[in-house]
Length: 180
Image (tube, rainbow, N blue to C red; front, side):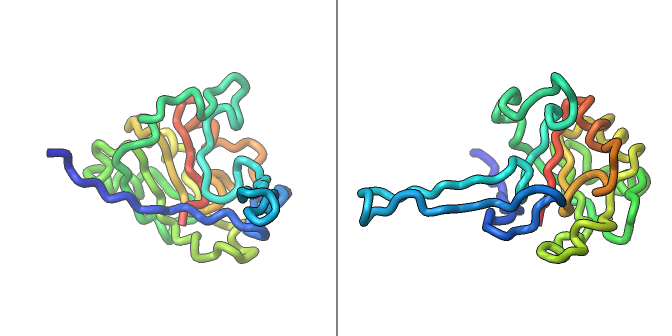
């Protein structure tokens, strides 16, 4: 018998005017064809690949890094563990290590920072919690495939070095951002 798995949708719906990373154009959705006029209905959808809930692969920031299509589809399926790190501005390794038993065997670590409550507000883009670089290294060493956050990025929005992205990407890991 196959064990039953619970799937929980943590994604934001793509809509015009939704929050996007500062400087990114918002998505557009246009009626392209209609059943009445054309015999079938289609929408023209235009948005950047980092709109809404999305996955970043190493090629996002590393020249020659793996793109999402280089991963086997099975890479994206696995146990996910949610770690509540609300209250931390810079999430230390100790906050993750306190959940060591929970994280054992998890393919993905989802950080619940509480920041999703600001989705749709200007505050969402500023001051959100992020991992310390040591915590990112610790997660890589544990063998997780990816790290997800309920914020706009795994690095501060004003970062120019993107240390957490680079730490995870150099190890071939993925990030999942804008979870809800």
